[in-house]
Image 1 (tube, rainbow, N blue to C red):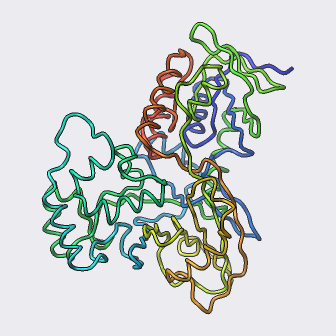
Image 2 (tube, rainbow, N blue to C red):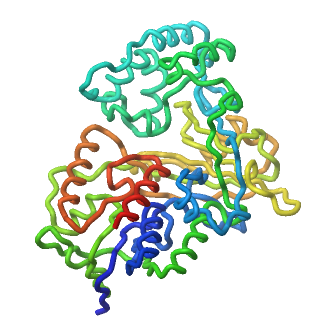
Image 3 (cartoon, rainbow, N blue to C red):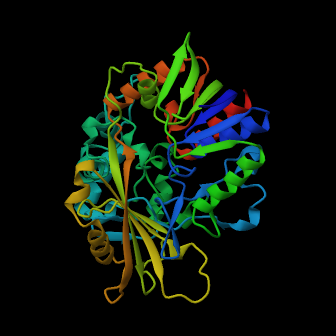
Length: 447
């Protein structure tokens, strides 16, 4: 039996775990970074298929604004990045492909419905109670009115998460950045956005009218996984021991301290543990009884399509709000990657988010191709040269109030263990990756 003693153990090798490991090792800790997946990076990985790199979803990097952290994330590889001051994000809703913005346009509802939605949106008082809303429906009624819930929010929630607004946490719309809508025309929008109240709910009609974009970055080669390859080399330089493809069998703790972590053929006796996977997993491995079930998850299906002619849209990715379509999001790689030499192969990824029991109910590669043609991304005369599919269990959490409460109780339980620090989404301190990475960096810097 192998042993590691006096070790700082980081569990979960997503970006927060990678950053925490690097910072801790740089400060003299003996760090072991552990992940059950075959490679580090979480979903920020890429895979090869017939000579082309595909990502596990739509992913771009961005700077945090913290110089020391940005140097860890990007330093030493500056020439290996493509930079985009403004991403060409699109959306598809009500049968309309809007290439100008990723925000839905209420004009696609027709004049009468648009006017009714706008009247409710502008007259909505907002949530004024000090007490948090009981669910998303209460919040959205106060912020947007009932018609937008019926026409947009509930159909989108049902499609993306399999729940209605009444079943979801009151901040559920923020998970998908569903906050602003295009209304009227660009001139009227400019006037509306002078009001702080309306600015929070009304979007510009075109992304170029907004001057607050954050620069996005993407590796020149290797897909987004090329970034993780860069970071792995940095971890190895500072002496982090990386263990992948290995699962924890048991956690032994006593007197509010983790004493031993067993991996089967390896036992680790950590001084500190940085935990970035689900806190429910910690509780289960430590033999701590849970009063609530683990968070319900949607399954993600990724379909790769390669065609023999360019896509008909110049957007880089598109979110599909339209509930008449199964697709959640489309990524058109050749609209942002560098093309090497002369090629007649054009690649895309198509994402579906479904209930786990639906995985085998459809030919998702066929659905992806048919819907991509219907939405106007693939020319009717274009040939699809190759198709492939990957199924990702536990791809997205369902954020009901019960799930949020259960997670908060699990977080509270794990935080009672004195030498365990929660980072990433396990901490319950946020959702967006840049914020979670910044918090992991800050915490590790103080140890």
